[in-house]
Image (cartoon, rainbow, N blue to C red; front, side, top):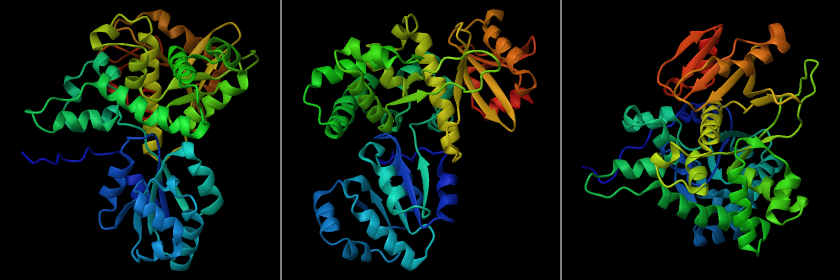
Length: 408
């Protein structure tokens, strides 16, 4: 067997190729270890590769940016560009002079201000792709998706390294998700985020991240979160903003149109990888997740991230929301598409009950003709129509394309 396993097929590849035909610079951003470098090197295998994580490369790039860029007459893949943000303004001059589409490919992490630097230096010259960890459809290319059960999918999460390890050789021991997530948390999140925030009290920050995990899928009260962690509201807000920029969490905003009903204005907090969430919740294995008190929140988290992955892989903005009135009636996901609003309820149980339709039905009664029919995504294996709504198995979930088809 070859020591180098085949690269997992990424659904964002066509978007990257399309943007490279229309912009001189393509930027890939997303969480650490989501596969940005691998995708860039796969799509642009003919271009030289340099990483700004390398000290020698970074020193040369910062000391003489023009000379550094002149080494690449056919362009290059420049990895971890946030390590040398000064390079971006010189990159603008280089691509303007050459006028070549797909000239340079840059990757980086947003928490270091990458997008702000890009908007200032490369406005109108860069096509942006946000790459999250593997979706269920991408995991299927490893040949394992059909044998996976829901609890294992949620417990493992989507980071490519976990699936790459399992494909290498049957003689090698696969790394355990809990071990990998522990290393990821200490190596990337604590190091990177602490570097940005200048945090000295590591214990307070660790407690903050754990408290956020316990709130995944819930309305976010920043004042209460700060108080529970023993920090000020302003500090809690600052830490949340960096965790969101680091693609660790996502704040899902409420839908703004009230249809005559008072709505909540607080966002909901979600982690962007269910495996990392399980690690922070101290879930020891998939079997333990089956009876965990927060299994429903983990399921919601997983479906939300699948939805975001699908949209980002198509080059679309997130444009998803939730809906909740002041009486607590809620739709877990709501998104507009071609003039309609699609209400989606998320239930982790394996046995459907008609009570699950109440949130979507209530929303549809308020929104009228604006609403498509409701969809329930649940933890069972069968998909079917019932009482004017569609019930969809987690296995068939390829949001939102599957939802559009279900509502057609």
